[in-house]
Structures are given as C-alpha cells and as structure tokens.
Amino acid sequence: MDSIHDMNASNPFPVGTCLTMCPEQERMERELQHRLHRFEMLAGTEGHRQPQADPHKTVKEYSRPAAGKNVPQPTDLRPPAVLLKTVRYLMEEVVPRTDASWRELYTFVSDRLRSVRQDMIVQRVHGEDCVTLLEPTLAFLLCAGYCVSQEASKLHHFDSTLHAGHMRECFSWLLQCYKAGIPGREAEFQALFLLYDLGSPEAICHSLLLPPCIRGSSEVQAAMAVNWAYLEGNYVRFFRLLRGLSFLQSVAVHRHVATFRSNALRVLSHGYSCRDCRFPLELLTRLLAMDNEEQTTKLCQDHGLTTTQGAVTFRKAAFRDLPGPPVHGPSHELVDRKMEGLTLPDIINGKCS
Image (cartoon, rainbow, N blue to C red; front, side, top):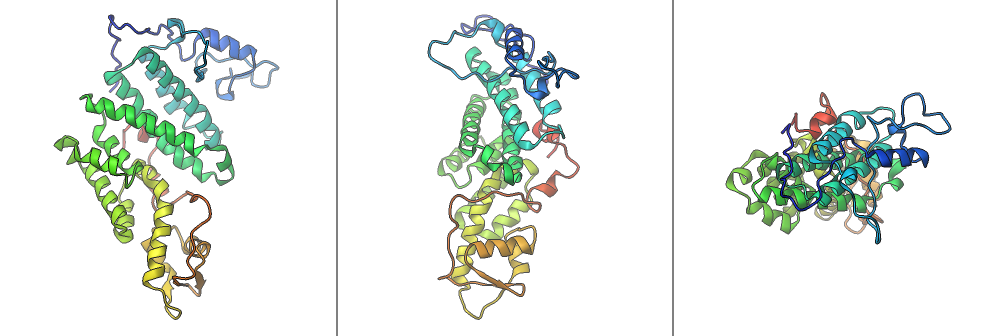
C-alpha cells in the first residue's frame, strides 16, 4: 500500500502541517541542548563541540505526556503522509545499519516509532493510514525483540516488559482496524498475533471468530496448528511445525520456545526416569530443535540432569526448574537460518515470506 489518504477536512481533531520528519523547533532545540542521536548528526560535524542536525535524518522524539503541557500545535504534528515517510526512513535507512548494535538500533527506532504513534493518536489517524503505519511497526518490534536477545551481554539494557506493552498496544490497535474492515496484510498479522500470544485462550477465541477467508488462510492455519501442539504439550509436533514457519513467524513465537523446551524435558524426565536408561543427546537435540549437542547438554545440566558419553540420564527426582525467567537466546535452527537471502527491510515491509 504505497499511498496515504488525506485526512477528512471535517475532522475536529488537529491536522498536522509539519512536512519534515522532525519539527524545525524541536530540531533546533535538540541541537542546542546536545540531544541529537549520532544517527541524526550532519556528516562531518559529529566530533564538533556542538554537532549539527541533519534535517534529512533527524526524527521527532517521543515526548512523555505531562500535566500542564501545552497541547501540540499543527506545526508540531506530522500528517499521515509524513508519518509514512518517517517509518519508511527508519525501516530502510536506519534498521539495516551495520555500525551499531541491535540495542542501539532498538533504542533509537522504537522511540521514534512511539513518537509516530503519538502523532497518530493526537490526530486520530484511522483507516488505511493506520494499518499502513502499524504493520511495519509491529514487524520491526517482533524482529527487534529477537535480535536484541542475541546480544546476551546487553540484555540488562532491554526492558522486555515495556517491549511487550508496546507489542500489545500495537496489536490491539491493528486488530481493531482489521475488525472495521480495513484491508492490509491481515492473514499474516492475525497469525503473528496467535503466535506471539501462544496458548492464550483469548487469542484462540479471537481467531475462531475471524472471517472464513482469513481463518482458512495458510498463515492462520499454521499458527493454529502450533497453538494446538503447544496446548497439548506435543513437543515433537510443536518443533516440527516451528521448523516450517517463516522468519517473522519464528521471531513472533520464539519467546515461548525456552519455556516449552523446559516443559518437554520435565515430561521426558518422568516418562524415561530410570537409573540405567540412556537417552541419546543427538536424538534429544533433534526433538527439541536445538542447534547442537553442546546446547542440549547445557540445558539438561541446568535442569539437574546428568549427561555422559553422548547421552542423558532422565531422573524424575533429579529434575529441577530453572531459577528466574527463561533466557531467550539465539536459535540458528528455528530462526537464523530462515534469514538467509532476505533483508530486514523486505521482511518488515512484507516483500518476502
């Protein structure tokens, strides 16, 4: 969807008149206050005492609402066409950068996308405009949630609770647009919602009430199959289905994988509990879709299970739960390999499966 429709002239809410990604007043203030991100600095001035803002790269910051704050003026608000231009710039120019960590990319892009949503709310942007802006935003947040998790040493900078809040806010808004009959990549994002909220009764009930053409789509059917395998505790079918998902579907469901693997190990520890029984690590690695036997060995040992000579001994009494929340580390088998030959901008914009 390449066009953004003009706002209705009778709209009682303010209509933005700012035609740049950042209002001029904010750009000047942030330049004077040394609040420019390095992505926004004019080339050649980064090392200056006061770096200059590049008007073509500076993007409006998210501003936290506060009591007594002035109501945004039309000159501070970007109309839908400029918001789309901003989102495209972030996805096509900033996200692919190779000179920054995912933590830095996420911090910058998620803040600027939050500012986009803020402008949308103030102007009551709706309809196709809303869908066109929310779909790439959600796709980015899904990808970023996984990619940041790979930077293990940076995890303490990533607020997973805040991230999940942004995800749910965007999903709720987008699903309401679909419910109102607004076209878009509906089958794809209905499936992503099911996978992100895996096992949620509300998400499953929502999917059962979808129009037949969406409910019967290959994307939603695949997501439903993953949900049933998850709810049944069928780890063999669950991981087999996960191998066949697309990259974006895989990053949506990835946050549930660590917990499900732990549950599968608990089931195996009960079912194969025997002092003299040896379960091959190679087989367990394949069943749980682990990347290698070293990963599987560590997972078993973390749960109190003994591994020797390429096998694990399952003991019901020895199994222990992991302390604290599960760690969602990288996964080549279930996620990374599906990225080969693809670019993040294409994935985010729905130009590839």
